[in-house]
Length: 86
Image (cartoon, rainbow, N blue to C red; front, side, top):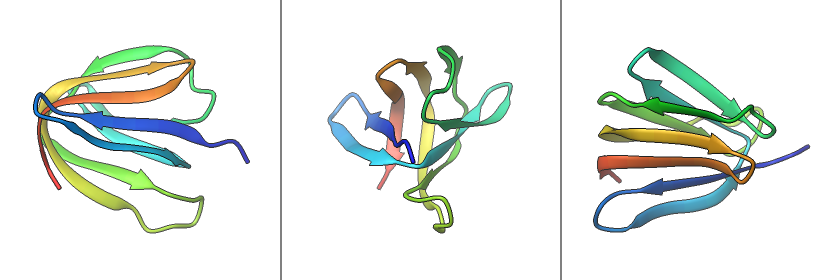
């Protein structure tokens, strides 16, 4: 099974950088899930919980984030958040 490279970054530091199954992001137009191989995409994000699924049947790890952007490209998913409560 393919994995998704995921990074969560705030202005202060790199919060997470890991291989995961899926991430659900609170986009301003609604939540969206990202799996490996997702089409390139960019979205603003709203305050809410980022849900990180380490494997297909895993319970999500939730991180509260505030504002920012999410970008999906051939390298994976990068979330640039104004704040992240780890």
